[in-house]
Length: 260
Image 1: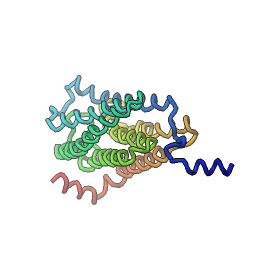
Image 2 (image 1 turned 45 degrees about the horizontal axis):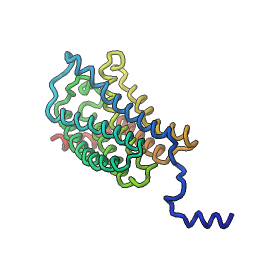
Image 3 (image 1 turned 180 degrees about the horizontal axis):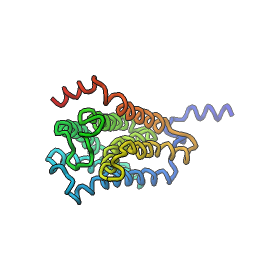
Image 4 (image 1 turned 45 degrees about the vertical axis):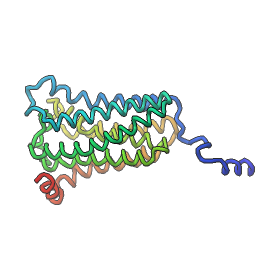
């Protein structure tokens, strides 16, 4: 036993089997999550595009670019999961470089789009009733800015830890999940039955945040640190934003400076 332990200690870490080594089903999970994120992001915006009677205006060039960049990210994320599933790591790396540039553009354009919506006081689709929301248009700004900040930070962390596949793929998944609260809010806001119950948006957010941990438990009988801590921090930040930060005088002063 002592000789075996010494041999294992002498082996490089990369040569040892990882405790988070993915079974074949793992690839299907990430591809499935990528497809789900794509559908969840696209479907809620479709009704206001098909039935334009409730729209409050035509999309500006900034909004069109914003939507195009975010849709491109979802396609890139799906493509990356498929490439890894096929074992095409070289193509995954090449697309990853382009995706990193895309992510940087999304953060910049996402910030400008959120500021522009706050200045208008309404969203063009008419799904989000910003005027009558308890937070109002200025208080609501906390949500898109938080989402885009989480996205950018998680992408950066994922790139830094790109050689730790178990961390990298979970961080990239959570970065994409960080984009989902807005589509969830649009879906609820467009439904006459659900619109008075805007707090229901918490339910799909919790499901999307818990998916990685649930899958870890089912596959590994334990939860990866990223699946636990990132989900917990995102959930806490979302709730603090809704209950404390968005209502605070300090935040509204910051918004006044940002919006001008």
